[in-house]
Image (cartoon, rainbow, N blue to C red):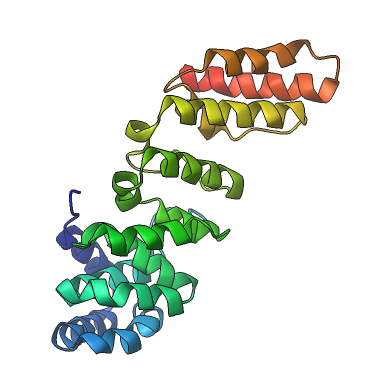
Length: 244
């Protein structure tokens, strides 16, 4: 895969840290470069020293896709480990709290790893119901490394737990006809239950518009049950807005 470069991340983080935070991170990076085992002690302490706010000062704190200061610092620490990162990642992920696991997942695209190391971490993260961990798992590494079936299941997981699809970089290129049809069936189920549909499913569905499934949704417009008819109207209006 195309490995992301650390320099832009380091520049962005440096601009957001105060002098004490920059000094601590520089010392921590130096330490793990010279002693791989130090990462186990340093990794949990990152948030206390660099902060946990958004990396982008203008980002919405509720945005589950937005990087945090500790995400970025943990990524830089893992990059500093070099080849030693492969050995440490599973342990850091397994024994870490939510923020530490998120940091591991964010870092994957910046590291040179065997698939046998990185992919199981993503797969485990996608089995959780922690929205921020699922969002972190659906980064560039997962988009490149997961096969079509895994991407399909991961996108459904995002929809069910409330991770916005429109901010998953690279997702449009991974949409298969089966994924479009799966999401259309999901929409029909929601409409038939008289429930709302997240608007960001439509760009994925319309990547490969599934004729049969879309016809079933449109047929709900003639339903005698008011809730189903209104749900269909709302869903299809959102689709039209997306197409416009």
